[in-house]
Length: 467
Picture (tube, rainbow, N blue to C red):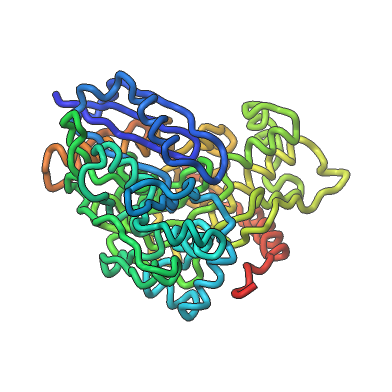
């Protein structure tokens, strides 16, 4: 049977899986680390892909790339990278985002134009930052790509013009899922001049070939690839706890949320992926573990030994600012501390509850946008936490299934590669282990209310346009 490969080029590493195109059975896998930081030379991603794929990719029939959304890869007229790529978690463009929102007529105008209200994560805000702070780099920028676009182009040997897909394009801030087209006026408004963009391919449209003859899938953003890798269907919401926290659902219609909570993205199958993203997720657990001088396993034990509500201790997990809600300059808060509740167990419990309450706010926003929430699929590194799994059904207020740990972004990219290879109307059906075990629990509104009170009391205004 033919083999296919899926690449996950994330914030921290490149992960590659090679699977049987028909059954989805894992054949082999590889990994290579990325440098830390919020800006990275794209060549380092390419080096990691080659390292992770060394000895893995020679006999694959098709490859697709899933990569971190929103990153800015600026190319000059010769196709060379202008400056290190600004990543999704780089918040230096917060002021640029506020200015762009006002310039277009407010949040509702952006939601109507592209389905989302730009915050510092979005590519369009990074373009404005570039124009204002590095005008020479902006002037040299002839083409604007996303990380997965650039990697797919490199896999093709830079043969032909770059391409992208609906899913990743929908996170730029200048492509409309509703209209299925670019809003190049918004790109030009941000950058100060027109620039080239990749052609948007259909979900299973080939993107060319590698020099070795492997077929290339169009690729997609990491969140879209994860949804495809999980095989998420109607009524299933993916809650991913990784570097970021993501709440997303495959949906038949585009959304337009002027509050900015829900981003209206496209998915990797031709439908839509309304999504809420937080900057702080699994790192909340590691930070809490450091505070109580414990490893993550001990943190779980401590959290599970404390009572719901952590005896009044509330942790607001905005460790490095926050994207949703839009508080780029915020920091974490521990509220309600007293001599009676100042224990390692309560702090551990408050950290897990704070993490989950922030994600629960995202679920509420999806519900308000008309998305059905019948069950949650809990994935990502943070889903390995026993405390997270135990507390999630009550705080997310939905039944929870935990698929077996896996590289779901890379799996989704591999599934797309198999779909392109087969030229079938639908992607292949690959079984996902763990979905048959669903856990439910009574909601804990008191915990949610205490968290909301601290969240609202510590609200800081976003940047003011023009400052």
